[in-house]
Structures are given as C-alpha cells and as structure tokens.
Image (tube, rainbow, N blue to C red; front, side, top):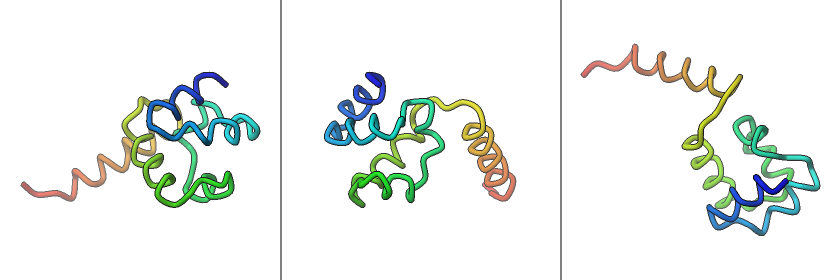
Length: 81
C-alpha cells in the first residue's frame, strides 16, 4: 500500500498509513471514502476534513467522478451569473 502511504505523507498525515493499510484502503478507494469511514478508521475530525477536502482535488474515476460531475452540472444549471 505504498501509494496510500505516499499520499498521506504528501498531505502531512502519514500517521494514518498503517490504519489505512490494515483496512485495505488504497488510492482506488479514497474517492469513495465518507466522513463516517474515516471516523471508523480513527481519523481525527480536523484530519477528516482535510482528507475529504483534498481528495476532491485528486483525479477520480468511476462512481465518485460520475457523482461529482453530476453534482457540478446540477449546481451550474441553477446558478445565474
């Protein structure tokens, strides 16, 4: 699970690398993690917020990307500039 460890280290949260590895959480799972998932892993509140915010910035694929894109379309269709 080197990829997840590197990602966590890059955002200053390397102390969670072993917890993620112990729970088979790798980079392919990150886009689908919920706040409850992170809480269940023992991630502190401030760190959960940081992870949830930063994971949006990393490229996603599959279900999470489709959901994000649909939400963006819905938001943009309701905005008037």
